[in-house]
Length: 440
Ligand code: ADP
Ligand code: ASP
Ligand code: MG
Image (tube, rainbow, N blue to C red; front, side, top):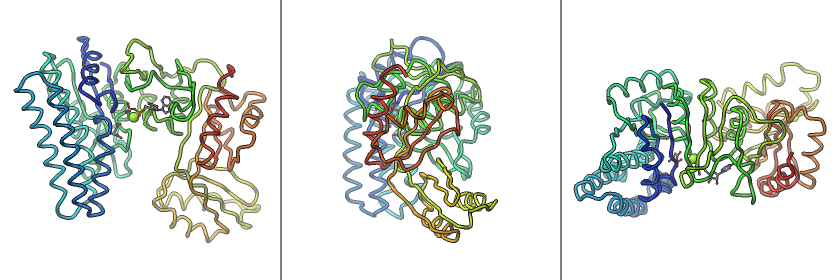
């Protein structure tokens, strides 16, 4: 069985939902993971933000606007009066849940419950659409099998066990529809897999049921060799290895949630990226094999903080790095890049919740400098780090760009440079012009 995920734009209008129906309804049994309609999660995040600030009146106005837009969708989506009524009922009950949080004390559970409504609505409407058009289709409730543990990591064993159980309980059908992004946490409360998490749902579910293929359907024809939002004339990549795709997704390629590749790689399940607006195109295939050597693509990850610790105690001392790392471990903060000299160590983090506490602890070792608003630019390909003359090509391409850190040799697939965010676009463009366009 295949697992197909359709993103926000793919289900973003009644016309697009019908296009998705056409793509999936080929008679083959499959699981379809849907995101919320485009713009919905952003609106729900905004509403939650207003409720945190006790700005209930403005929140109620935004809720009303979002509800009105859904009422219009329902009118356009269904043919029969009976299904329009059913559709309006779905909308009403979801919005009653959202409105129930506009009084009383707002909480994290409240926010997570609000954020979940986007996917809960899109999947119910889509299932009704499929049924209205005569297709054998059932809803799989993601909240009954998607789970994260205390460290907010996906609980693969739980997902495997419960996905099978829920499939049995729901019973046979041709098309199973389920919600991306949403899950429960270790306490059983509603939670989510972070923004863009529907891709991750698809790969976790694909791995759990040992799917034959995981397909991520979106609004572009596949993985491009640079970020099309910042660079013109980017090109689609036909094939990527799991390792290359994982590096690009982790280092900011928005087309895939950063963790999507891992479950697929463990089970060796091919991942295919496809365009809902152009289904005939083969898209990008991600498998264990890489196709050819050299640079494949670059990506950028924003919101990075660089921390430099300068200490005379580091000189000739062993155990110094261990003491530094222990502080990051204590505050559960992952380190992305690292580079050391005799008396200083520089590293980067993107999780800033405990930055001040980390800084206070590091202050005991020496002088600590913190630089915010940095961007990691990641250059990915096969054996690029071993290719002779490769480093000089990268440095020539980046002539004139203020590079704050470099990571080279940590992986044969990746070279990363840290630049101020204000230089992100020019760095991506320089790499495109000098490394990607001439067949390198
Ligand atoms: P969805 O809502 O379907 O999940 P996303 O917006 O999350 O879609 O991801 C698709 C978008 O990712 C594209 O429209 C494109 O602007 C952006 N993107 C960023 N980097 C890349 C890349 N390297 N290749 C393709 N798309 C990319
Ligand atoms: N709807 C969620 C978001 O906008 C999840 C997703 O689309 O993947 O982040
Ligand atoms: Mg996405």
